[in-house]
Image (cartoon, rainbow, N blue to C red; front, side, top):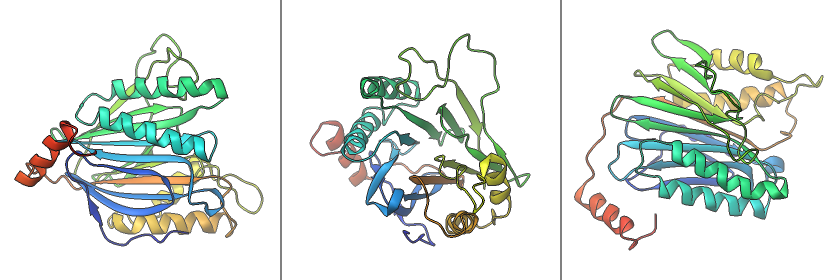
Length: 283
């Protein structure tokens, strides 16, 4: 399996998009956030059906995440990964993620003719106000730890009825509505985004871990030292399965809110941003 890096690694720069559907274990930083991304495709393949992306806007104030679990593997997922990256690029400077989610649904609607769909979670962090907005399209519920209380809990929309079908997986229904959760973040808060390989992990008796098991597993990890959580979580999941291989692609993203301020782009970064906006340099 990929090794978990113990320290923070790559710092995203303005207008950068990082990720894909490959095996990875990487630490990334953006203004206000420390991120750990772990992805292990099924049967230890080089790439799989889980697609992850992290992007930073031109002003360094908007960090966006996509984690999608796509039905299928191989070339289809690789091509879809490119489409997701294009959508991230087209929406990199938008604070409102609604258009991105709608575009994602349309993208998968075309693939639904081939019986393809995806669950996905899209999240946007704004340094102004320290808020994280999350939209869930049929994906496993994120877990959230509030540092002030030290308690983990699942995040789910509990507002008024939208009056119709909502929050379905991408590509199921063209007119699906999507609700959003706006989460104010405090210093030290943690958010776990993951694919269903975590909750569907089976022990030697065929018993799935489930949401309750994952919640209990996260409660046992050291939240005061978040850089240790990825490696500890992988080890705990492997121990639960009794060392047997995973039965699906497995990916998770851990977000740690360090509450650091957004720094204005340097002159060099500003020139790179203009070059990308004008199409003189690839995003």
